[in-house]
Amino acid sequence: MTNTLADAARITEEAKQADAQGDSHKKALGEDFRTVGRIRVDKPRMRCTEVNVFYGQNHAIKGVSLDIGANEVIAMIGPSGCGKSTFLRSLNRMNDTIEGCRIEGEILLDDQDIYDKKLDVVPLRARVGMVFQKPNPFPKSIYENIAYGPRIHGIAATRTALDEIVETSLRKAGLWEEVKDRLDKPGTGLSGGQQQRLCIARAIAVAPEVILMDEPCSALDPIATAKVEELIDELRANYTIAIVTHSMQQAARVSQRTAYFHLGNLVEVGNTTQIFTNPRHKLTEDYITGRFG
Image (spheres, rainbow, N blue to C red):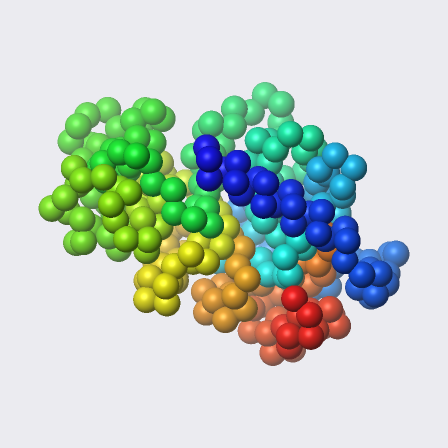
């Protein structure tokens, strides 16, 4: 919970910073701005239409429409305060935890409105998992970190089934060989990179359809970052992944589509290679070439 509250405070502060940025960039968008690029895909896992997010009077996300395709990695990039983390958190209602936050528009997961008042957010967050900026393993054993979710969601009926889920999840996260002989040891005793892969394994354990990653490598060293990036590429075969990153190099390495956010607007979205080699909007080009950020 502490990690969630810290992230919420960070995102709220970034949203305030966005409002304080200069008028020149606002003029570059224009009053009748529309996202550049193809916002829809043939096989969407999630479909967002005219999504607006408010923190009190602050309009943090402004009419964003975007599909997140099945079995793809989509990277969300942009300067601090641009709204990318706020948008990511709206995809599994993590913004519900922020006082004064209000969401408008429609977000569908397999044609189901995730903001339907009748929808239970607990199973939603199992279907749309979240990996945070800083690793946040439970203060439990490595085994219990993975077993906790399947147990409370009733996924495993027997100890044998639970053992299988734990092993499979750790294998998918590339961690099994490193921890198989110390499953009873605390998850907090692992290295930072191992802890982040443990958190990814924990998300996988409840059989999600979508995995959201909010700057998952920002606290890791280059070797640990490379392992997580390899893992993201492997997971794409079975999961849909949306990742927020400040590293344009990382976005280029791990994603198939990239969405560029600025001042709460989705400025441009497209094939990752195209975004980085031939951006169509000047703000996208300015950000990628380092003119601001």
